Image (cartoon, rainbow, N blue to C red; front, side):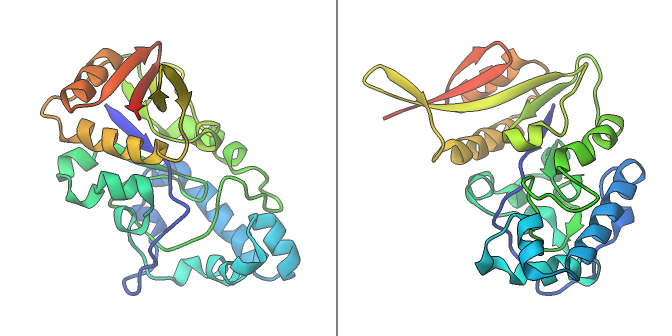
Length: 246
């Protein structure tokens, strides 16, 4: 089993530490050239007008300071991705508390890095799947071919997908089984997708799957482990639906 996580918009900025080492990141041989291209592009954005940079990065005027930060990522202090990414999903997952063997089953999707392992050291940055840099375009398209080459995709592999749609667009396996985790609220017999709690649910389910003694090898196995952990789930095709009753 491999679990794919989304990145987080909120990040903790490392205050000290050695700078980024691209050669140490996951799949450096397959993804390194694409990462260098994006870092180069962000450095160019640092030299254009703020109004153009804001538009390319898809940030607000109040975030204008992020432009200079992104332009200097090569020299910024870096820390393990598990400590840099924050937000609701990561608060519920508490990734750094899990054993190393469990963390090895995790990859974090990223518009800037393609994917990273929890232990990969990265700097604070601001670059989302909505950005559109000159000579780069949509990050999903920028990464698609490289990720298809790099990521595991064999018959019999189980990949549990916690990503949002913008990151799903960058890579889907062709041979492995991709199991998407969705969250629904149910009250008075009415079931609706939930957005405000979906990240919390995905973080809780991820933690349960990674803490389980057995490693699931099928959607049915993942559903069984989620039930054992106390979640109400339904397996609908290749969707693991988590029901939250209110």
